[in-house]
Structures are given as C-alpha cells and as structure tokens.
Length: 177
Image (cartoon, rainbow, N blue to C red; front, side, top):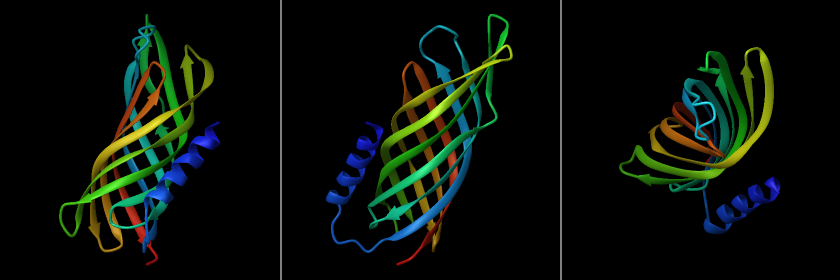
C-alpha cells in the first residue's frame, strides 16, 4: 500500500509537468524537531536536534521531486509521573515541492508528500519500536548562489496522536543542466 502511494505521487508529479529542462540536486540539513503526544496519555513534549539528507530533481523553476532520509540527533527527553521517557525517530520521505520565485535568487516553497519511518521509545530503560508514517508537508524559502542553494524550512509530519514538526536549515547542491 505504501508503495502505491509513492507511485501515485510520482505519477501526479510527472503528469503535471511539461517539457522540462531541469537539474538534479543533493543536500543536507540540520534543525530542531518538536515531538508531542496528542493522545493525552503521557503529556510528552520535547525537542531534539534532527538531520535530513536528500536528493532529487528540479524539473523547472516551479517544481521538484525528492527523496530524503531524516533522523533525530539523539532522543527527545521528557518524564511521565517521574519516569524518564526518550523518543527517537528515523524515516524516509518522498515529496514534491512547488517554488514561487520572488526574485532571480529567492523562491518561496511549499511541499507535500509521504513519510515512512520508525519511532523508538524508551521508558525507564525499557525500549520499544513502532512504525510511523503519514503525510509530510512544509513551507519555507530557497536562496540560490549559482549551483549551491540555502534552504530554510518548517516541516510537519502527520502521525496518529503525535505532533512532529521541524525547523531546518539545509544546503542544496545542484548538478546537470
């Protein structure tokens, strides 16, 4: 089922773009991720650093498609009735991004896609893992310096009864065209 969702995203992107002269890119970023329990069971709310490594193809000045890997840098830590709770997250994301150029170098961006990952929770030295997946979305900007770009993004990741969001700064390097 997850593969079907990814293929639908790819097909929609390819159908929606026309004669394109684009370029590939790779990039990496660091940021801060907020993890909150929305179920009311634990009241968990903590932040930790996160990283993202990504690569993709920008079809034209307005559309791109990329795949990425994201991970927390260590675990987000909080406590529940005096017991320490730690949560870490890793996952993959596939997304398409719309760019709205505001000048020759600056573009605003909005992205949407799907993420699939794993969360590891540790409570009082007992660990467990769970699958995590859902809608991925974000907004931000991209500033171009020739083949190198600076990106600033706010990204959200839907997960049942959990709020996940990240503020991230990334460097993107273009190649080709």
